Image (cartoon, rainbow, N blue to C red; front, side, top):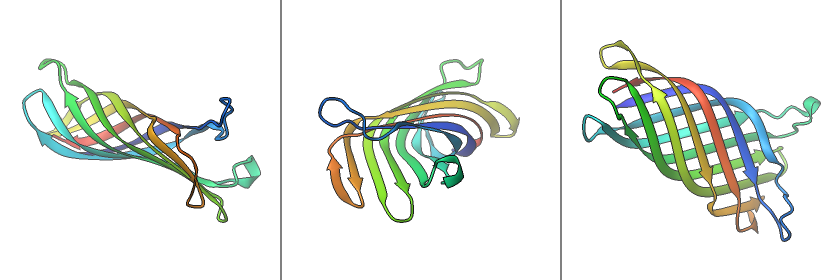
Length: 171
């Protein structure tokens, strides 16, 4: 199967120093997101594959955002279709989330591993093609790292990406 989609997403980046004080600004806000997916069917109820998801927000100094931001996730996922009568699925997986903010002079990057969950409803439109409204969430906190201009700053970070969108897939 192959698919992709676009929608609205919210990104969150967290990191703390001693005493629990946040130094990353936490909520990054909402922006456009997109995803691409590919995989194979292992039974009538289960698909396995990989996904790439992205969230991007342009810098806009006039509105207080002087830098471009990008979050990408790379996940291995399984789709489970619990009912043959209703075309919805539940999704679970694990992967890597990466974040970058760059103002043209300095760059802050973060990465971490974590789980992804999701749900979707497949509306068939022609043959094996479906339109799919979906919701996804990824929470990456394992093995996180934070770097400033390539140099390690902290050995932990928390990344999250929430998406709501519509996709097109060939299953």
